Image 1 (cartoon, rainbow, N blue to C red):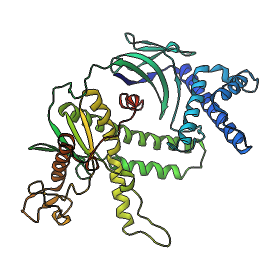
Image 2 (image 1 turned 30 degrees about the horizontal axis):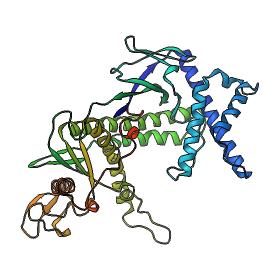
Image 3 (image 1 turned 90 degrees about the vertical axis):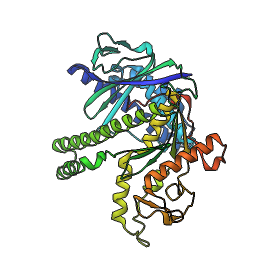
Image 4 (image 1 turned 90 degrees about the horizontal axis):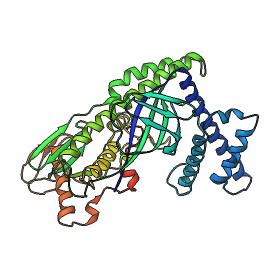
Length: 416
């Protein structure tokens, strides 16, 4: 099995290289917006979808035109890749897998361009530098070795800093069902707000405290947003205030990503079977405001709960567990969450009255008392074992949706 993995590094360009990278990203944004505008105009006029080949012809004409000759100062491969990305976005929209493509703004927090072929760049790991077309050698912060054959490279700007993400390909020696660290245990994981994750490994129970990254930085972020609201939109001071807001959001996201990576890696390395709940997070975090005719109840409390749920990053946590399990030979299952915190792990009696409070569980039949999150983790583990070992009905438990090999076996560029 081929394993695709991305390695992300912070670049250290000089002033000229940094300006050139900004120009390259701007040219790709121009190509995207012009191509998207042409598609929309063509559709309104009753024409057929133009597609990648037709847009490439238009790009060649634009690079040779005196009005847009500055496009030729950027590598053509990055602009052609932008057209491929737009074509893919349209196909995803036609297949109802994504929303309609949007125009890109100049002052977005992030911008990027990609070199799609390994022949277009060089990686010198011994000297911590990489050669990029029309930029020359660019130094980077070497945090780890790049393993595998480099396939493509993406340069991105995130909140004022430039990063390079190198996607590699290598043959994986992991055999399905054989854990690389020799782990043999099964664990059930119950996620929550008071406790980020409660783990049940047979007779062993443990939990991971939540980070609450957004909550920690919420007051500072609110202060930056208030300052931004007092500035004239579009002015130099407004842009400065906006960058502060963007950096604050980036800090929240980085702290959350670091926490999730450490938690998921620890779990995968120590367990051969991981059972999680198949949660509908979008429904759980839906607004309770209602409508003008039927206003919602306890809107403020629900808003706070929604904020706390989204602050945990449950979806990203399961995504990381999924591809890391594939990398380490572990198995991951997702089971329905219904009644996991209402079913007694001792006698099997299920009733909503067993859940006395958010944290307290007391069985009305046998009197068994325990933390409700621990009860849920035990029931999740037991349900996963019944699905895997006893062949229980698939409706009671099903494997995590298996995406393509590429999606499972490569870590997204934003997390390296």
